[in-house]
Image 1: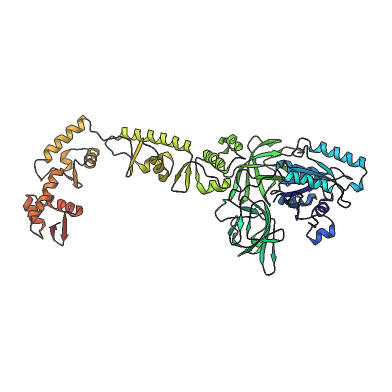
Image 2: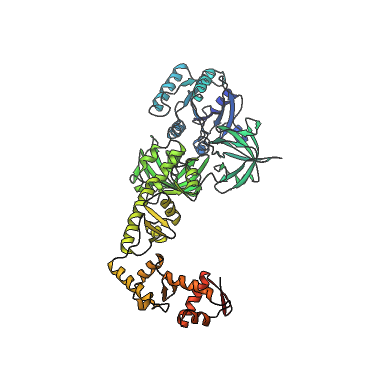
Length: 593
């Protein structure tokens, strides 16, 4: 259902016009009735001749209530700019048009109201004035329909123009619903009810929803739209949800309702910014601002990235004290507290920018603002390098990037993965050159040197044939430990001495370096029995074979005498045989397995 939002100066006949179009009075507050002006948001709906049902959001025109006006403009598909023919263009006409322009709301119809209070010449002068004011804005070329809500003049023509405008609207359904709450109240016997326009996905009775940020969870007890109950609701629909499990105070205006886990709020974002054309002085960092997104308003700090001042287009970091569930492409309005007016607007480029944001290339981000969520996720990932899969989806409205995924929850940009792999290969090659006898570079050391988690390193190793991860080490593919001439000579001499009998020389007596001993043990050329004794595999095999000649329940002395050894060799050999499972010790005696 397309949503039409009114805009215009106070007392220019917006609410009266909506009543003429729908037969419903959008002013719902007693104070509004008494004062004759709209203070808060009003709602109504009607069926167009084409059969399309449209909803109206009637926003206040008085400058004191501009915050309330902005709360209702986010979900609008078509703008209905209202200008009274007897008064012409006024301050809030300009400010409301600025909002429509900053939000880039291109489908606009202009109603020239209260024509019964002006002669035809005045009406035509007002029309010409409007055409001048909307030039070079989103409203340029929009139809201007002269109407009178009391007599009915021009109402049919206005309805036809609205019908044509809403025919071009598109409803986005990316399966990730969210609804900015613009009203919450209690109905006796029902409990908490919240209203808003459902965006980006559908909801059904019984669904669990989260109130973001971190305001609680609830279940949808009932759904109403246009005073009719529904079991299911599609995106683009104005709705009221009856929630169980939450009080009205738990769901204030500005809260966002969505599925649990779908959204990741942020307090710092990178934005493309554009100032209003009527700006009297450039924006500066030191100003006090309010950020308007969805139906909410938050105090915000501004850090300009293109210079100390901004008048026109640029980029800025927006920081708020409270987290906001933003996604890439979200539109916003910025009001400056000191000026008490709208000064800028724009779109969110990166909901979680790096600390050193000046090094970030904003061009690719701007290029995908209206692209698919998947394309947006890929672009965000390219800038971040690595990111949570769930966070990427939250910051793009459900996007998934084609990338290596670690443990099902972390994504790595392909280019980043390629660069890391090149660094890893270089680091391993350097390590092998410095440590030719070692089995490879320890994985933990390699991951630390690359500045990545061990889990990411394992994913990189799975995707390449240039490196091999064996156990806790990494080598270049095809790497083998090879002894040089001096090491070969030392090893041959040591082997000859070992072969002389089971009463072998100690490691110190053999004179082999520690690195060479470890390399020979890993290669299976030596078996290390204790900290200072090594044997050749054939020697150990002979000992194991000879165990069958010993009686069941043999002692250390039996073992010593049978193999012609001293206790210096018998005890460490038996402890090693126990550990390897060749013998079983029972107190002071042993048996062969």
